[in-house]
Length: 378
Image (tube, rainbow, N blue to C red; front, side, top):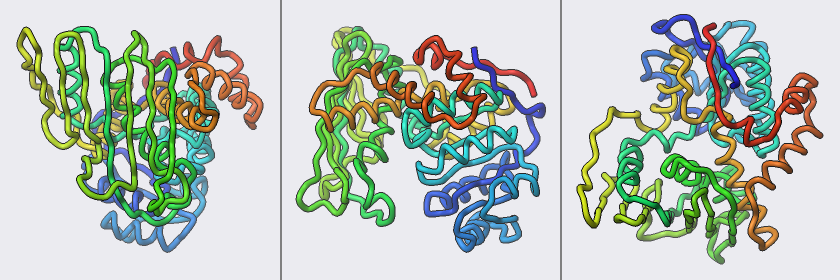
């Protein structure tokens, strides 16, 4: 079992540096501001004016800002790092933070590729620090209820998600390759793993770009995943589908031997059990979106509880994305284990740190390495 350290105090404010002060970064800074357990002690951005504007968004223009993470760490001595940057920056920022002795909560995806994500999992093992990926859509009480309903349906057979939105983001998303699969589909892919409590075996995917799309890369895709136990998960999504749009969570249907459940992504899910009671017990709230992610990160650092999104548990969601892209590129069904093994070989070949490479080499298999995490008191 891999161990990560926790903070000694269960009630002291967690002092953080946030890296990234763009539009998403500002949303996080406002989230930081209303969390009584968090104090932002520094903001890093390559654009110093953006970092200063982020301090204003946080509500404290006096917060130290800079363009160099390591320099600001030395100046402010934080307890943790929040990485709210574009995916290409996730690997270097998280690596630097972990090897400075700091835990990291990072925006999804864990890294730009599965190979980089495996490198970060190994880096977390070497350093003994927590790296948690903010899969914020898991922090939704309706999704928790939907999973409870799944347990009432007997043997599960099919799950589907229909996703249709038409956002005009501008910026880097408009120029991304595979924009829907890379930037959005990881949310439902991660949610279905949570829902089923199983991992994927294979995928067949096709993606395309409608003629009216304002994105350069493919903004629509359809994919069929096989999960453990023979369950099929079908995803059909578009990011250029104006009119009659779904929720941001999509529209879900889950069918089993004893009945079916529906969730529109915005309201309480519905269940119909053919012979039996469809009621579920109310559970405590898991929080909402990035606020839930941040609260879970703080709780993990204080108590040692392994959070949803810990990197070892999160890699498989990114592997689903990478496998779907490979499938649409090659026009064939792709096995998830093949994706993991190729990513592992690439991680070994490209790793720049000897200690991380040695840790990767110690793994008996990728799936075994991703099985679980333990904690030690700091």
